[in-house]
Amino acid sequence: MKAAVYESPRTVTVKDVPDAKIEHPCDIIVKITATNICGSDLHMYEGRTSFESGRTLGHENMGQVVEVGSAVSKVQVGEYVVLPFNIACGFCKQCERGLTNYCLTMQPEPALAGAAYGFAEMAHVKPGDQTVVFGAGPVGLMAAYSALIKGAGRVWVADHQPDRLRKAEEIGAIPINTAEQDPAEVVKEATLGLGADNGCECAGYQAHDPQGHEDAGLTLNGLIDSVRFTGDLGVVGVFLPEDPGGEKAQGKLEAQGKVPIDFGMMWFKGQHMGTGQAPVKRYNRAVRDLIAGDKAKPSFIVSHELGLDEAPTAYKHFDARDEGWTKVVLHPNGHSNGHKR
Image (cartoon, rainbow, N blue to C red; front, side):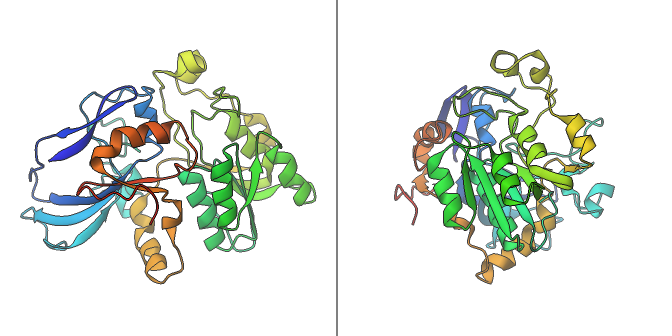
């Protein structure tokens, strides 16, 4: 089968790789019909992780079941499925609590929890809330969209990419261009000086200012400043225990995952922080039904639909944050129209 393969920093190729096979009675083989480029892929693409050469990319995908293991009874051959990036057993202590993002069974390292293939809302948004989102990439846009669906009264989205801020405005959010305004000041001015009720950090450890200077604490500190006393902070962006490329880009501490944040201010304000990988299966049925009921249309973030062979070029454009490259869907069958349907 063909796959998008990571070769080295900023080098992705499309090549033939061995077909998948049933290795465990609970395994399912899925023929992928669509996948996409995730923002988390860029950490590997840019050489900022210890991602091995030769590994396949594309952990956000859907497809048709073509084979099932002997222990599988619920899923049938021929059905179409959407695959979460979490790998979870479904029966361990964490999975039984709905925390499939921290499965104890599927992690081969006993000292750790959780597993994912490829790689990788906690702000407790309620109806009427004032919510601020840092980052207008696909994750930030979906966080803002989710807050609006949940009934937030106002949602601000802070970023310095004009095309992505326009997309945020299209869905009903209030854009803040960080190249021109201080998000905390904008939010406080609109909330009688109190700040937002809650907010999400959707940039991660490679957050950078409009001039391109990296600062892993930039958006976290902006969130702490923008959210009111006792407010909730949801850290959706990826942060890692170690960042192999971090020392050159930021410093020795950042390379060890030690991010300089305004913890004293966060403590003083009595804020609550939610972190970690999303427990996808806790939400997937509800999200599916919102889409089926025409209450949610997440396809608004898709800017390009391309054939799999165009993956190398698509990664370059997406990594460069080129104008209009918001979210790229790749079709292994070669389908390509270049842009959103």
